[in-house]
Length: 308
Ligand code: CP
Image 1: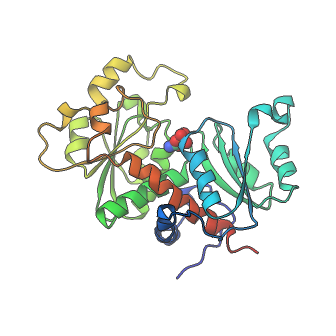
Image 2 (image 1 turned 120 degrees about the horizontal axis):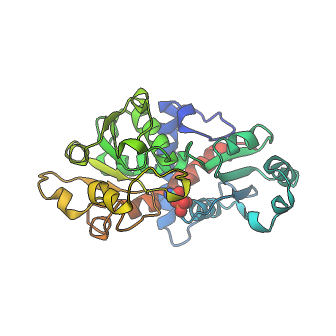
């Protein structure tokens, strides 16, 4: 069995198929821990993990914190808003000062693509990217891969259609890398201004027709419309987007097969997804969240667990 050799986890673009499979297999062995009465193993006892979140988060921050605690690590959630960053300290100086207190791992979310990479080059402890701008969100894609593998028993040959704001989506980019490396067939679908030029070079099929994306899918992966990252008017109106690309019951009426629904959260209910779809029995949305703990336990264990 291969060994994990990386200091950091910055992007799924960097990982080989074998490295992704190592994380998924390790996560499988950790999933059971969260079902125990005492949800704890001593794997990271004595390690210190720091959450450095420069952008809001519900799922990722909580999930990393719980993953670390279930591995018996000490976790500090650094409050950026009351830190010396507000006095002009750079993120690199902030990270180096915290590292000087002998921590083992930073988990970093930042609105600027490349921020976790920049910090990783300036500290010797592990750095895990928890989402950087429009670049990547590797642990989101890993938990999505885990969820699909758990549901279908494989990734190879699975047809996944990623719907919506591909242009601004770090989740889409990480998922395209991950699903392609593991042999899935990936389609992206959305209004033309929200599909990046040359995205076909990543090995995906592009369609602008939502019916086409739905008919040719085992899984619909619905993205949040990222209003906070849209500096230009990419869409004439939200109402029009929702009518054409929003996933509602009507779009499934003619479909004969079962299509599973995934969404990374947070959802804009009524815009990219209707509640009637989010709550359907083929929705994997909360299973994704549950699996996030096991996947993040695996990532933390592999990056810092073997370093004594
Ligand atoms: N999926 C995801 O990254 O959600 P949060 O922004 O709540 O962490």
